[in-house]
Image (cartoon, rainbow, N blue to C red; front, side):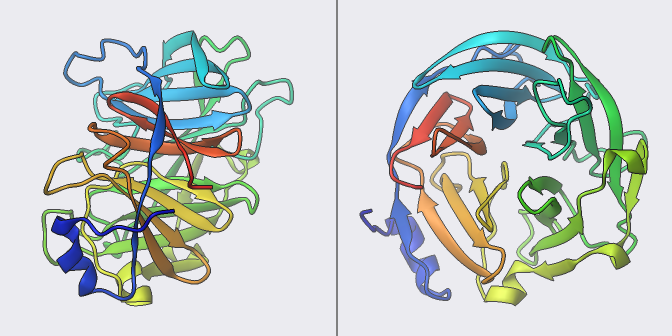
Length: 298
């Protein structure tokens, strides 16, 4: 993989702990077929893949399911999530470990609300939904909330599942990305089981880990965060909106070694990145301009 330093990032990276920015190319698969894509408030957001199906979310909670076949895909269904709401940004979609019924086509879907405004008085809610067997609707089966009594997170807390280890990770700003004093916190919990009830509150004292990336590694950054994905002990974080000041960078955080890598995705897309998953042994990325598969990042 060719290693390059973009001019507008070179100075910043030189001030940090050793970090190389690897350039990545991609195969563009095509545009998405979301609901009223050009209408304000229906931007593409969270996405995840299970088997040969890709589920794409839009702001407020619109879900579109596609059947994947190599480089091709076709739209299967589209519906509003049970958690559809003006303050459900649906920023991250992460499939869990359990199925509501063993005959269901998908495991439970975890959707990060991730909005500046609270949902029914609750901040940064994690919605857990069952996608119906006919893929035409979903039902809300559990709601997870973090008791942020210590003010660990500002805007906004995102959630992601580590499926092999049955863990739930929260990641977010301590303030927000416009504040120079902002830092980035990771918190780790055991993934609550569905049998624990329809409403689960995670408490700070129950956390298995709770730390700042900056303190753990000495690495400092302040990007516009997008989606999340955990693969082989690493947290993949697409960031940026494909602008000079906010470039499209995929940050990769090693959850065990507490070290950071960075991948330049500016050659892949001129659009805003949104979420990342895996399909057929490669990473697949959803952006505002469609879907693409990273060529060399494994």
